[in-house]
Image (cartoon, rainbow, N blue to C red; front, side, top):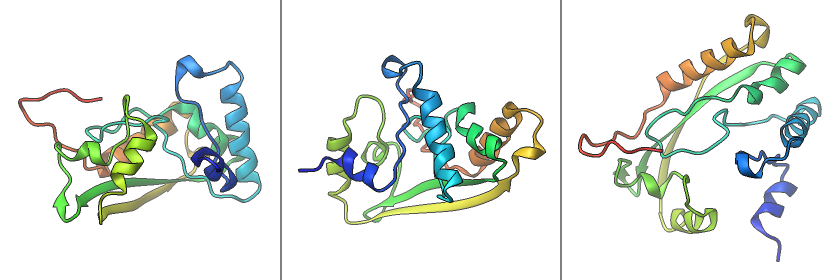
Length: 167
């Protein structure tokens, strides 16, 4: 039986090791090269510049290396934001966020099985703007500007006043 990892790899997914304790010194360079090769082959690449997952309460910081392939190849960056709005007709809120957001110590398989129990999950995907890497002097400027636009369009899950913990 083929595992989930093998299936998504056959579909063209490029994996990025985001866990520092598992990262080899050559991993990032190889991953960025894989992304560049995909782009050079004319494949559109969708990535989440946080390079990790969160609980939906904030837009996490963007990682500069995620923008490097676009800079190296002088390709535009199309910013987008994903907002989850409803699960089975009920608004997504702090109580239901763990049903959608995979983060922390959650296992992918258990989370995936839980997501499959819902009949309907409403998601809004908004394409925000195209940024040209040439318009930015430094990678920090491109990264920070991208984060600003995405953060402005993202609708975070609100944390109740009596519970200030978030990932």
